[in-house]
Length: 298
Image 1: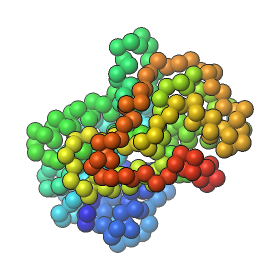
Image 2 (image 1 turned 30 degrees about the vertical axis):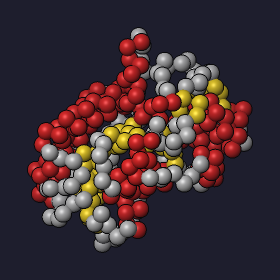
Image 3 (image 1 turned 45 degrees about the horizontal axis):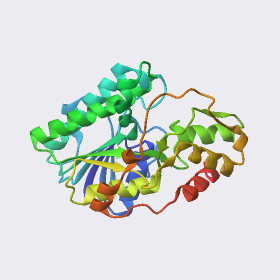
Image 4 (image 1 turned 180 degrees about the horizontal axis):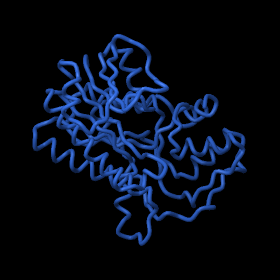
């Protein structure tokens, strides 16, 4: 790859990807709503653009002319907090994702790659649930985005890849997801409370995720959907106990304190065989190694 576009460029995943691409001498158009507390270096290879994704005309007017190999779309409002359960916020995210597809097609970008989440799998549990937590709206919105984008991209002839991410962790991840919540609680000498935690689960270290993302941009892809995980899912309870042990605070891991949310994850949901067949083995960090480093450098 020689030229790429990255939205959500100042976020955890976007900035990590950009720093990796800089090592490969790639020119990057970095798009974010703002670059306050910027996580990106000052490099001539980076063109920073502060703009929202709701105005296609403005985007087309300020993206430098060039032959773009990949358009990575990570920008998403409402991944935690009250916005995660706000349908209006999540619907806006869907529209912004469609806008990215329109822009990618108009500028002749070779491939559009968008960030999904394993939380999309929660839709499979909807039929047997009478009550759900509001945060499930986020997973449903991602699922809907995938369906709309894949359909639309096939309609307009835009090469498209939906990257369904497993649960991501690393020292700089402060998004409030399961591992960052757990470590933050334990570091502050507070309880980390969970449900029964008997479901299948998977975590992937940020550097391994980025390696897969880069390769999906570089390699020929035959599929529209790839799950990016560790390839070694376990029972969630086992992960939580290990985090507690490595933090030296096993007694603060309170499994079973919260009720079961009823969402079912199965081992087959975390199968990364199709991805490995396409890009090869991209995992270099075991959970034990990655979580130890994350805790020490959090």
